[in-house]
Length: 103
Image (tube, rainbow, N blue to C red; front, side, top):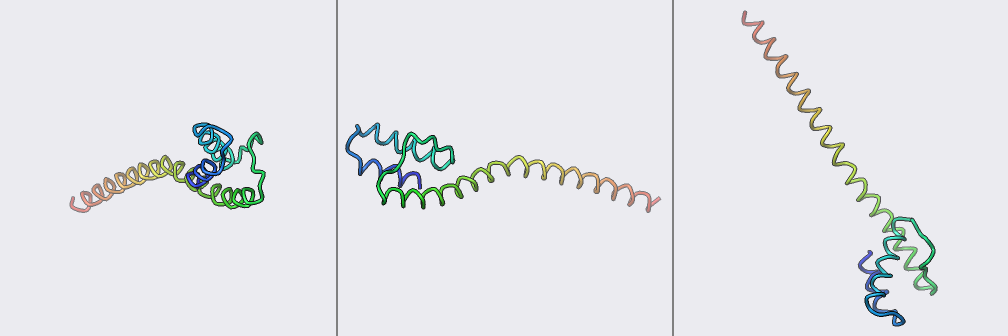
């Protein structure tokens, strides 16, 4: 979504240099999707506002999903470590019980 917004602003704005257009488009995309919204850049046309509503709705969901995936890495690692610890304990307990049955 950010790439689409980035290029749309780059294509349809002629008052700035190309670098500044792209910089502002990227800045606006990041600030808007992360819901920071400083208010220094905003859409003025009705088409731009309509696009921005859709962009933000989808972008916020995608950003939240990406952050959830990043946060899941340490949780998953901890779960695996705990699982291995439980398996080691269970295996050693079963091994001891088996040895006790033989004796």
